[in-house]
Amino acid sequence: MAQMRRQSLVKFDAPLCETIVDTPKPKGAEVLVKIDRCGLCHSDLHIQDGYADIGNGQKLDTTRGMTLPFTLGHEIAGVVDEVGPDAPKDIVGKTFAVFPWIGCGQCRDCQNGDENLCARNRFLGVSIDGGFSTHVLVPDAKYLISYGDVPPDMAATLMCSGITAYGALKRLAGRARQRNLLLIGLGGVGMMGLSIAPALFKQAISVADLSADARAAALKNGAASAYDPSEADVAKRMVKETGGGFDAIVDFAGSEKSMAFATSVVARGGKIVVSGLIGGNFSIPTVQWIYKRMTIEGFMTGTLAEGQELMALARAGKVKPVPMKQEPMNDVQTWIEQLRAGKVVGRIMLVN
Ligand SMILES: [Zn+2]
Ligand SMILES: [Zn+2]
Image (cartoon, rainbow, N blue to C red; front, side, top):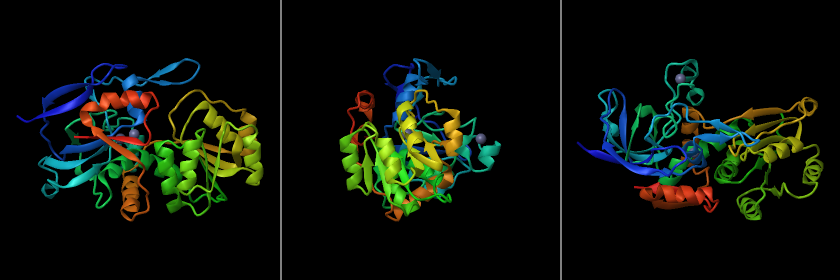
């Protein structure tokens, strides 16, 4: 029997290590994908930890009864190796990006196409085995997305940072209040947001980040203005310069400070979508919330339809690739440590 090699989580808050098991045989509509590459994401670090920081030194248990060993990794691209009896045969040997935010298929949210909201989800690399491996079992061929001429590294990351950025922006597009847009936090997802935003918004795009390098990169990549949130009285200046603040804001950082900053520069009737997972414990005077008539929406991942929409945008050349570095899959733990130490610029793509 064929075997697969995985870089597995065998203990929470401990390094990944290699496990070897028999390659699963796809049943029903399942599809076995031979993995070419899988991106490393900040959320992999949170899953490895087994907790999230909720501020004041407190931790939220995120292990949800996960059984170990477990394979992380959700930004997957590869080749269909084998299909179950109910899956289409003609996809064998073809390359795809894998949509990882898979629901149970039965509940109200799944029936509505909001699989990313499913409480009994089967998210690849989050609740069922994912992509730091030679193979992954995908529940249905409908989660495979053809990427055409899009570079495979980019196709893989579109399914996480891309879809999160796209979904967050979509929840701001089409509102009546549309004078301006501010993107806070220019990590991988924020930069992806900046690259996708012109496809959804006509107005000039502003950015804010603590890093001067990140601000310079954003200005080079289409941002009209860039702000340093640590500058004294910057919020006051921004509200003045914009004639009342920003109508639409995405907070790609999601920390106490970034949310305090976002709520200080949001316009009356404005909306903040927060999708960053840095964590902490954000508070706001209730009356400020009400006086400003602000909306705050939490968001992560995205729907299968959004994955397909985003890939169509990328195939039409409307999404700029973000810097990516290829590294061997076997070195994933080394890169996890580098990412934890803040030493990774751009994104790491682990290749088999
Ligand atoms: Zn991710
Ligand atoms: Zn469901």
